Image (cartoon, rainbow, N blue to C red; front, top):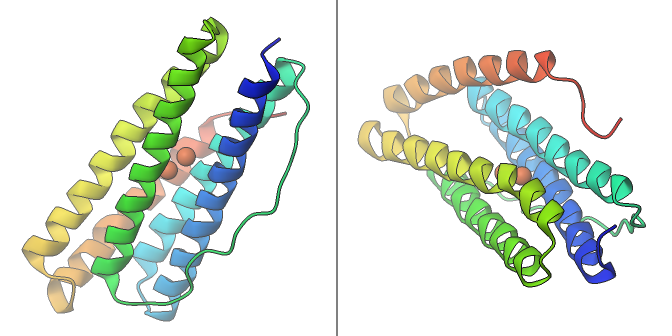
Amino acid sequence: MISNGMAARINAQLNRELYSAYFYLGLSAQAETMNLKGIAAWFMAKQNEELTHGMLMYRYLIDQSATIALSAIAAPPADTEGVLTMFQRTLSHEREVTAAINDLVDQALSEKDHATHIFLHWFVTEQIEEESTLNDILGRLRLFGDQGQGLLMIDNELAALAKQMTQAAAKQPAPGV
Ligand SMILES: [Fe+2]
Ligand SMILES: [Fe+2]
């Protein structure tokens, strides 16, 4: 069993992961309106990943006999300001999530809560990968351009990536069940 304080913080992170899913869903919808099918598919695949992260938190709380406290999920930004802005915004969002995960690790360490500390390892590693992927996409958008041929190329690349992500997700059992 974990402390009430630790459980409250993981509950807050569960909400943040569900918000992340909503955030990506909003970006997927924006990409659809721009006819960027590959980018829309990539954001949708990310949306699924974030739901999975949320469910990992949910299952961990239940396994630790903590009470689940679901709160309202904020609306994501609705405006479209171009593809470069979409990915810049995504990177800053993921950096905030990384900071939140690091805070959770600090809390687990301060409470000598080894179980939560180990549970959080996966999220620490995941955030490295998420930020790295976004840096790659942003680098390529800056190099090849966020319009015309450059954008078409990145849209195609993200279509392929989204397909890989969807196939990988299909092979894993859903957490939380
Ligand atoms: Fe996440
Ligand atoms: Fe994420």
